[in-house]
Length: 398
Ligand SMILES: *Cc1c(COP(=O)(O)O)cnc(C)c1O
Image 1 (cartoon, rainbow, N blue to C red):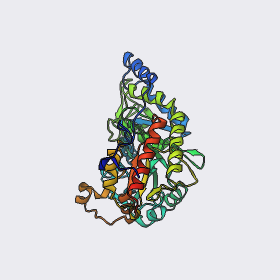
Image 2 (cartoon, protein in one colour; image 1 turned 120 degrees about the vertical axis):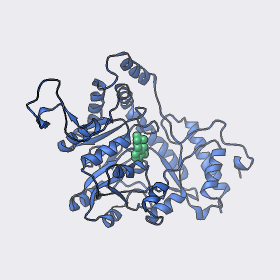
Image 3 (cartoon, rainbow, N blue to C red; image 1 turned 30 degrees about the vertical axis):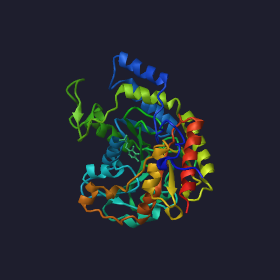
Image 4 (cartoon, helix red, strand yellow; image 1 turned 135 degrees about the horizontal axis):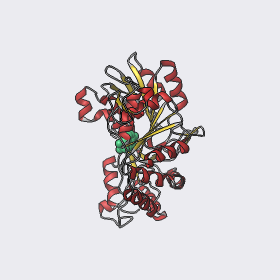
């Protein structure tokens, strides 16, 4: 049996690899430079072009690009009419932004539990969380796997709720043959560097609904309109005139970021294919490793995975998750944990949320760990990661 590096053995590799990393090409750099040399570095044609690219890719009618995935979620909540006194249902196994956006609007995030095998929000638990204050459901495609959108749609229709999909992980995923972005009432993407395509920082909201679209455009740019049809004081005084008709923000993406996004979108099929290839290798390698549980994928989701999450079966191992994580680091395979249940954070605790709220989420959290997954990984990186996981699972097996 091989000795873990943390106990004095030889690490599986010399150079550290990380759980995720962007892939910026020379073409991407050239596309950004071209915009920087031109007249419009913001509010120009690249932003509009990026929106058309996302609409074409997903099949959605409208896209609005913004400066982050968090801004995208905030705009979606505003467009949904989320406000003071409302409740918004989401999952605790997500990045905090999925719940914070409800707080930005003065609403209360309500946490539904997850399915213990897919780790996605459980539609039955959503149902149990509904009150007469519920306004929207923010369902997160955790790791890139689509949520059970048909069931969530049916619940939202039954109770008159707005279905927002936090698709920060899942651009490129299809649900029943349809691209994510063209499924929920509004879908939010993130273009942070670890995500599938990047704009440095950035996000987008997609919708098929004209009314949501109008509200999203206003929310992301000061609530200002140049459209006479929307003005209160039309006919207006002259061509310079515009009106602020709602409270909006400055969540605009710059044109050089949009150029990076467009250039990255040229390679999305390649990125998705490589991610799927790596996931298939991992699934096969870990299928029969005692102590390692792999995430279940529902057949409706043709998943472009953003994260590869292994779950330690701690009953079958002599180590703790902390020890396994530190031992992976010593092998030079840097993992990450996605995520601490949102309501465990002090800020949420101070708002009155208590541990024990979502037992499945808390149980799953104890064992999960994201191992490296990004398109630029070499075959050796993949083999080293598999080696490290199996080496440690073997060493720490009961
Ligand atoms: C990354 C992420 C966000 C936030 O996106 P940013 O672009 O970083 O603001 C929201 N939700 C989830 C699930 C994410 O992973």
